[in-house]
Length: 179
Image 1 (spheres, rainbow, N blue to C red):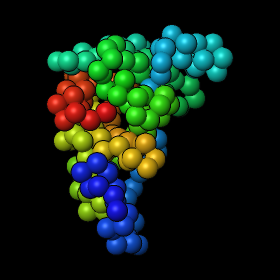
Image 2: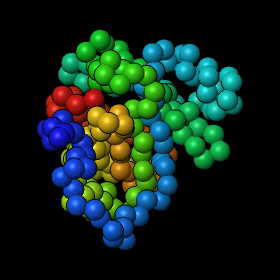
Image 3: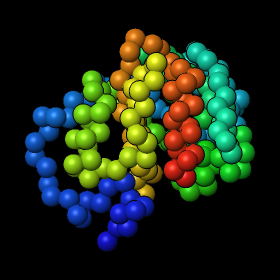
């Protein structure tokens, strides 16, 4: 049996759900990847795959940080994330799950409503709903079986990520000790 404290979804304790009418995803907003070397990852996406570098940014928490790059092409977005300290969230993610998928961001119309719907279905969340001047966001706990975390996001017309939103996310995850 799964440990509910460490699992984002315990299928053994959940009854099957046949009604999916409240689950309306508009698409994949972005995919975040944990990388060893940001410059090498940028080269893969830009130099080999032809993506455009939209923006670089750095986030500093109270104890840890990360550097990131948004890579975009043909309506797709990958966010490349590298740690800045060995204790950082990205370092912990890489140590426990390896490089690669950090999270998949699913676009939704109402983040708060979707969080409540998914909680009823057994998914737990590491953050509260983040209502900043930019996108509204929430992050699920990482599934120990698949290694995936789901971000729910609703954009308010902005493209990319606003520093305040990313900073709030980072601080909530740092405070909870999640990665």
